Length: 134
Image (tube, rainbow, N blue to C red; front, side, top):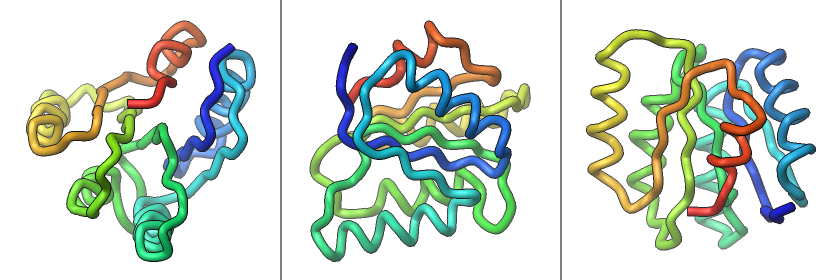
């Protein structure tokens, strides 16, 4: 079983967060799993970590439809942060809108981070595959 130091889940749906956490327990060892109910809380934490030189998560699970700050707005600010190390950002969505897929392609080409697009629900085999450091 692989080991990841830190994972971050950004999703406003507690059932999805619970499900991702439960599956993660069976596919990876992780020292820390932080959760945020919206992108604003998460980006504030990421900015704080960058400013105070604290470790960032190696893997992020990001919902795109959330209140206050959605996943796209989070991603927009996140890719502008002065982070040298690549981070795996797994977009996790139930959206079937092709505009969301096209938007992912656009963000993916703008950054050195690894950004994947995944449809809910996530399955154990999918989660094992996308839970690796970038």
